[in-house]
Amino acid sequence: MNSLDEFIADHASCERKAHASAMMMVNRYPDYPELQRRMISLALEELIHFQQLFEILTARNIRLPSDQPDPYVKSLMSVARDPKDFHLLDRLMIAAVIEARSAERFCLFAAKLPEGDLKDFYVKFAVEEARHFPYFIETAHLLFPSSDINLALDRVLKQDALAVQSLPILPTVH
Image (cartoon, rainbow, N blue to C red; front, side, top):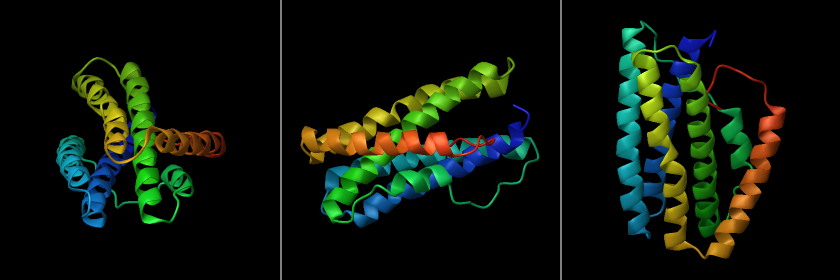
């Protein structure tokens, strides 16, 4: 809460990266039209979120920072396997966990904000973000057997636990 502006700026960067990640899946996996439809829909939502945060930053006279590597995401990405289909499954599970943790953090953040427009925004935003975790899981179920999904999610969650324990606490979403 002492670095509110930094947190909001980092959040904007995260939304921009989420948009780019969804569009990367559209480009990288042309053999999966349903995946593409779902990722285009998600990319549009993430872009709207980015726009909303950009407006908040502008109103607060905060400059949008350039993207920086996210150590948490980098840690999760370390478990993504190489073969194309396995990589897609792993990316979907990584995205699901990132979205779940983000929603969790937005709930905690919103609870600490004083009453007002910013709190209202983050309360609503946390609810919207909470839909993304199951969206990625549902998408995976369209493409992969449940047993593969469960194994991949378990691997990502184990890496998530390691990352959370090892990374410093900063005014960032992750």
